[in-house]
Length: 283
Image 1 (tube, rainbow, N blue to C red):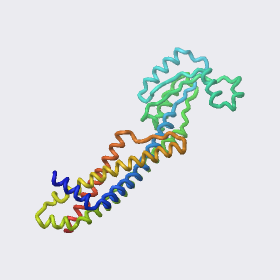
Image 2: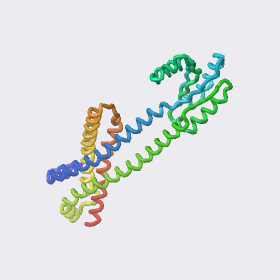
Image 3: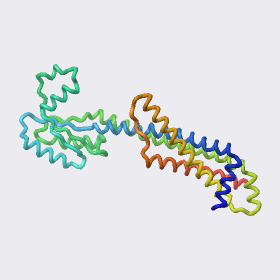
Image 4: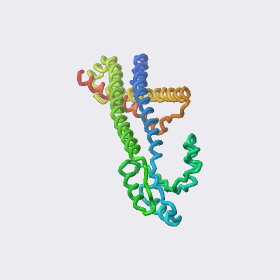
């Protein structure tokens, strides 16, 4: 192992400019992939926040006994899809309408709005089919006059989420593929720069594993360093966007950032393995 590490250090000293170029190329490739990841992350977060607003509103008939309403709340809260059920009194409904539609406050001065049940669903149960099924079950209560949940809005939200998810997967694979190709080509330049050295090692009886090992370690280290630089650049871009636009977007969680840096190392390792393997077959 000590001999392998010496070979790695020797290769870096022999071609420092090429090593720096390799690291910067890896960093730029991973930075582009990281920017895409940040956009995908924040789009997903935005859709999740919008999805949290999915609710079912069951309007109650006038004069419904509070006992019947309380019993229904207990029943509905026990549904596996339901996260919370709140009773909205006529007074609360009126106050909310005046607050949310202040420009029409005069319309509500003498208005009387019906009491209702506000039903929030658990994550994973906000798709159109599940929402409609829960709404139909709530509709079976005799004192429920009407049930609304914005069916068309829920359908559109679900469609947008599916399209965004599919697009994210396709573009993510495309970005990752381009990054692998660029990184592999960059590392291949390092291998070609040491082609004569590899040929001599083969002539004196060095095994393929012995020849590969320094390049694999070199590729992994360059991938990790490139990943760290890409993470730093992504953080700078994230900070500049937040300050310039005055928004508060989300950044990668710690475990995601660590995974990204290690992924850079793995990509560097694979790129080295493919490049060295191809060269050894030609020697």
